[in-house]
Amino acid sequence: MTQQYRITLPPFKRGMHLITHFIEKELKNLPACGLVNIFLCHTSAGLMLNENADPSVMKDMHRIFDEMVPENQSWYTHRSEGSDDMPAHAKSALCGHSLSIPIVNGHLGLGIWQGICLCEFRNHASGRTIVLTVIS
Amino acid sequence: MTQQYRITLPPFKRGMHLITHFIEKELKNLPACGLVNIFLCHTSAGLMLNENADPSVMKDMHRIFDEMVPENQSWYTHRSEGSDDMPAHAKSALCGHSLSIPIVNGHLGLGIWQGICLCEFRNHASGRTIVLTVIS
Amino acid sequence: MTQQYRITLPPFKRGMHLITHFIEKELKNLPACGLVNIFLCHTSAGLMLNENADPSVMKDMHRIFDEMVPENQSWYTHRSEGSDDMPAHAKSALCGHSLSIPIVNGHLGLGIWQGICLCEFRNHASGRTIVLTVIS
Image (cartoon, rainbow over all chains, first blue to last red; front, side, top):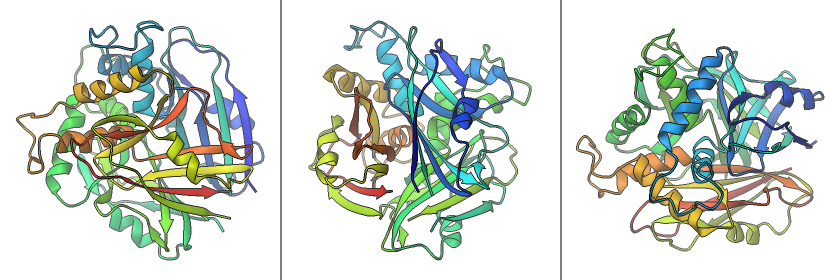
């Protein structure tokens, strides 16, 4: 009864990106009721739910993360992979790497304003890998 | 074997509110062992676990979120729904929108000091909707 | 089909600690496909995924949390258990108390750089209790 899918997203530039449609495209045979776990296999990007309607929310979220974890702090010791790297690890820990979303009537039970967002915190990342696990 | 319940909480004022009793009231027929997913269908409130004993923790958590994501930053672009709105989206992303809690011996397997908290980040919100999914 | 294990970690000093090996040691009979929920039964420590290779990431994460939630703010009202206590509750809410990780081919489906970290935010904590729930 457990389904599992591995997908690789296209590369995204640094910032917040709605990816609900990429996820839903993979989940065509959902059971009527259950749970979907969306798991990102990386430590310098994250997953979050946020407003899916006004792109200004994505824009402001990007800067809010930048303000919370500034680059180039003199006391960072993890510096070898660029100034965006250690902040990316921290931001990804703050938003987290997995989402668990209920399946309601055979569909993702998101609220009407909720979108699934990839938070890309690196300047030059490759396509990110996600594992979808459907439990019912 | 999957159970699912949708509940609407009463409206809460801005701040942190213990809602463990609302959740437990819905979960009267839990299996002996499994997992409960508590999912909040909104993007300007959040769910967290925190100390259930001393109300000062709830009070300080409220201000800590306010300090981390200040209102009225000059560079916010998402401003049309009030000064509390964009910070609410950010705070909700930081604490998250779902909790997955083990079922141990037929009850929520929370630690002795752990309470389930609704983090209401809007000044004037309606009752929030939660979906409970029980997997065993 | 649901498995559950309760483990108590050894006491760790304040800071970030990779505990992937403690978790994997308990999970010797995983199904081929499913989900593992790792749940920490405390409110002054947290669980996160982060880079498992360079110890400097753990060191910097510790300070990043300290910078985000400073000790000894004059407006804290929850003060009776020491200056590290209220910040510990806040930091634990930020990183969260549970991780849900897919089981892929009978093993934890972590990304190659992902490690499971205990974030110990108290100065003098006892061993922390974790509940592992395996769903398939």
